[in-house]
Image 1 (cartoon, rainbow, N blue to C red):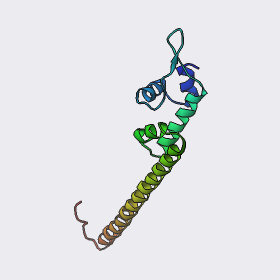
Image 2 (cartoon, helix red, strand yellow):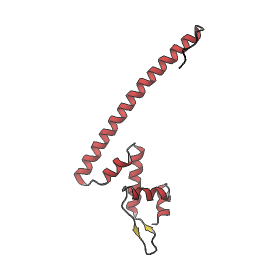
Image 3 (cartoon, rainbow, N blue to C red):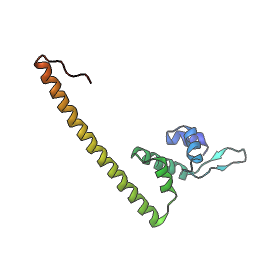
Image 4 (cartoon, rainbow, N blue to C red):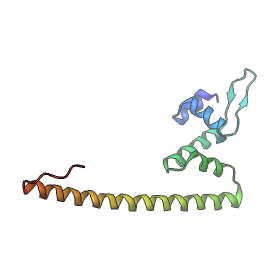
Length: 123
């Protein structure tokens, strides 16, 4: 299939496919006699994997590294990446929880000051 069809099927712009190739996320496409890029079904599968990785918050560098692994190294690399991403998310959730608590406390303090007729401090 040509790049336009691949882009349509993947739901992305053709420029994104060219970028993925340039960035080493996808193998270079074969070229037809007319010079057009030609892609097989494996290219669509690779784009789907890239999109899943991005939706899960992985960087393109992490996705590129994973695409270069095979066999047991692929399994170990994926598990290590997933563990690291889960740890990142846990840390973000803890930070957000602390910020939420601080915001709720500030909201209560400002409301209490308002009810007493006091002006809240300038932020």
